[in-house]
Length: 90
View 1: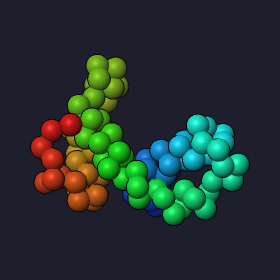
View 2 (view 1 turned 120 degrees about the vertical axis):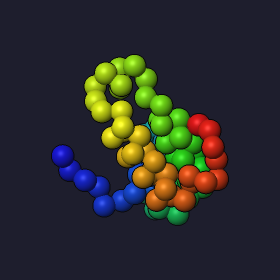
View 3 (view 1 turned 90 degrees about the horizontal axis):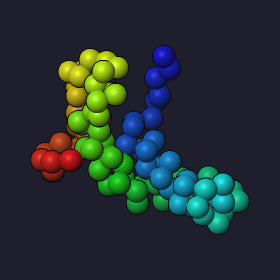
View 4 (view 1 turned 30 degrees about the horizontal axis):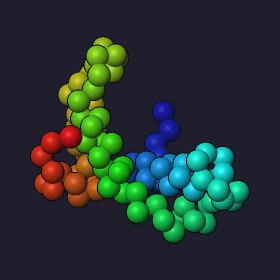
């Protein structure tokens, strides 16, 4: 499995920014990459909220794999983002 060199919070925030800005999604910009580069940080808290929600997998996710490993991976991503102590719930 490939491993990204970019942290998951930035990757999620960039996807959200791209969806908002790009004409290929909901935005108006035909070439949004530079704007995504300059604004993805504005979507960082949205990305962190998504990761907090993913701490509790749904039944299909739970059936597919090891819950302890999943939790460790999500907590690691939140820890890397400095988001563990700032919020106790999803």
